[in-house]
Length: 249
Image 1 (tube, one colour):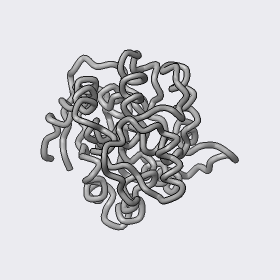
Image 2: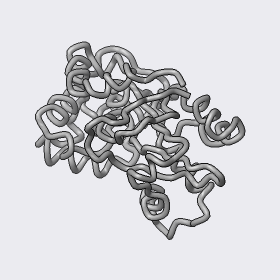
Image 3: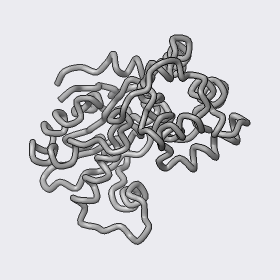
Image 4: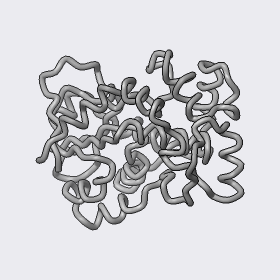
């Protein structure tokens, strides 16, 4: 497991953290969208002594029963955070919400309000240039909030990249639990046939129609050209610095 040492820093309050209900150990988890959080939702639902109410979302259930204070996170023996390259994370958000259109309603409403454009017309270049750039990040949908903004001033002693999720969680919970909950990535957009070529300016409605008809999902390179990738790296510079600070355990 890796280490991300943020202890003693002057940081904002951090966002949602939860205590994993594992007997004998206090395990805290930082919830960051598009970094494997769907697998953690399944884990919490399976291990919790509580049950969700009808129509209660997994996140709302976790907030109701397993939310952790900053002091509880600091006192935990294990503190988990999963990080991801910010450019790949934003491309994944666009593919999941605009192309695949899974749970996209809130983001579409936010996009229409702030970008002043019909989400059906939004290309990936529009998503970055009209929505992410020029708006205060905390006004945007939580799926695109910087990873850095989520973290507390503590040492995360179980910190690893998304691509190492299963092996990292095997070190926390053991091989059986890791295989059960972290083998398949829910909401992953990388398991579909790939569309290449320059699709950076293609409207999302066209990309969605092609996905429904043929299952084709634009590749990272097809959506994110060099200029747009540079804009994202500048916008999420703090996240890139986090990745550079991630050290071995």
